[in-house]
Image 1 (cartoon, one colour):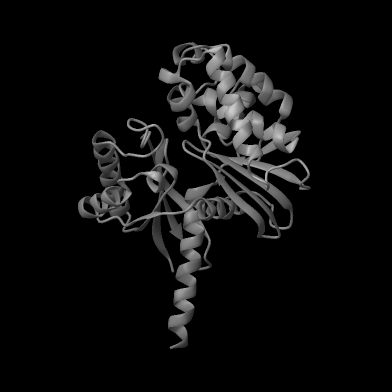
Image 2: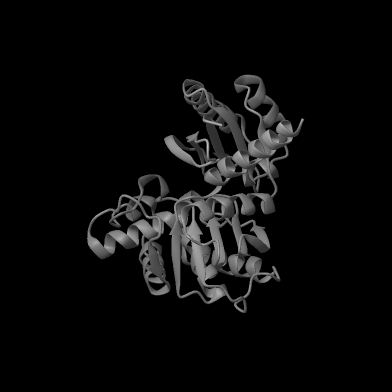
Length: 321
């Protein structure tokens, strides 16, 4: 099976590409990666109801570049689209145009499938196979929750709460107001309370966070502790007190420019991080979390693991005949 696979995570906030080399034993090594901020579906409509022409062109250009990189490595491509694409009324048009112009077949997966793929990625990053864990992944358009033990999920939920979505709804032009923050808090709380699986009575050994907002927050907290950046955030643990303190500091900065003065702040995330942190704080409150551990693996690594598994199944079937 010694070959290369390209996984494309077509998220709401950004598109990610990883190229991996698969070894004969089924393990893999990441040999290249790219990330481009897209903000898909954020220009038109009240929600993520439409992918604008400009967003479509931007996405196509990024995917053409990703296809060239994959071609260089002779890698097979698997592309998964999440919240913004699955909700868009012109989803089919977008997917058709992507295939026509790049020959990339896009899978627009449902929220549960997205959560389960994220969990596959997390299992590859941390020693959690024999533990009961809660995974939380805050994206641009949605937040995924999955409670698992011994690799089996008790529930997998996708809630329409994301850093880009809530910025658009409550924080116009990414400028913070007291009323906007309060309305955003109440909305998050209502959405989480409406789901019967999301409550503080669950028992688990670890809470694990992945993707943009959570990793970015952990990076800032790490910098505050040591005064320097870590090469990897994988396995890093931060406390409830630290995330609440960071959120308070961020919410005092009314504009994205003001937020750039927070040491460790990522330039491309300074606009949407307030909404993401409001989601994360409410997650801590809802589940009564004391701490959270970072997984640097998420959906894209899950795509790779799932793809390898499907390849092995196909090889096994072929071998029988």
